[in-house]
Structures are given as C-alpha cells and as structure tokens.
Length: 156
Image 1 (cartoon, one colour):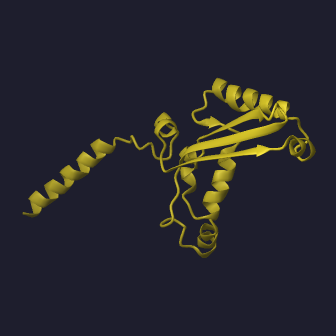
Image 2 (cartoon, rainbow, N blue to C red; image 1 turned 60 degrees about the vertical axis):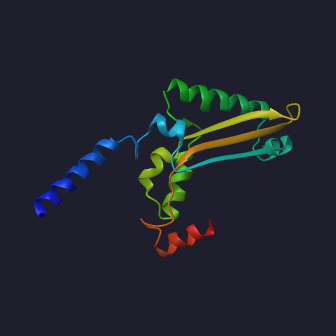
Image 3 (cartoon, rainbow, N blue to C red; image 1 turned 45 degrees about the vertical axis):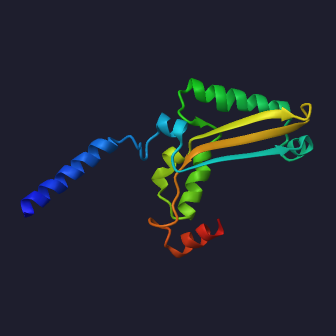
C-alpha cells in the first residue's frame, strides 16, 4: 500500500511539473505577462496643467511628449525591451516591495510598464498614463508579517 501511495504521489508531482512547464514565467521577463497580465493590472493617469509643467518640471509640454516618444518608446523598442517602455519603474516597484515585505525578485515581471504622454487642451496641458499589467503582490507570507513591513502594507 505504501509503495502504491508513494508511486501515486510521484505521478502527481510529475504531472504538475509537466502542466506548469514554467509557463507561469515566475521571476523572469515574458511576453505572456505583458499580454495577459499576471497578478494585478494597474492603469494610472493624470492631466498636469501646462503652467505646472513649466514652473515645477522646468519643461514644456511638447518637449516632454517628444522625449517620452524618443526615449521610453522608440529607445526601449530599439533596445528590444519586453515590457520596459518607461523611465525606471523598477526602482519604485523595488522600493515598495521591500517596504511592504514583498519578494523583491518579483520586481522582474512586476515592473512591466508603459508610459504614454500626449498634449491635451490644444497642447496646453500634459496627459500622462502609466500601464502596469503584471504587478505581483501579496498580503500574507514573505516579510509581510514583520512589524515595519506590516505597518507599510497597512498604509496601502
């Protein structure tokens, strides 16, 4: 009986290995995460008044739109980026993950991001959107039980 149980358990483990086949793409960049998402998908957008762009960012709306197109979109494409059409989203994701007790290695797929900018209101104001299709977060496990990390997680 023990041999049969052991044999069945091994068969189940082998079947799980075959079914998963690393398609989950855990902790590695993969197009499937960009296309289908994984974890949470988030879109943030804002419109910034032109006077704020000028005074605070010391830039012009048109110049920021052009810079985003050339650097984040075209530059990332030429580099062969997979889901990295942004200005260093991974820095922010890593900081939040460490602060809230997440697995920092999940930064790889969680930092998939595209930043889009366009002039609005006849070119006076700046509309920015950030799309992140695969943020992998948790509220239990890992370092989420540590006092400081739990406190940061509760803030969110």
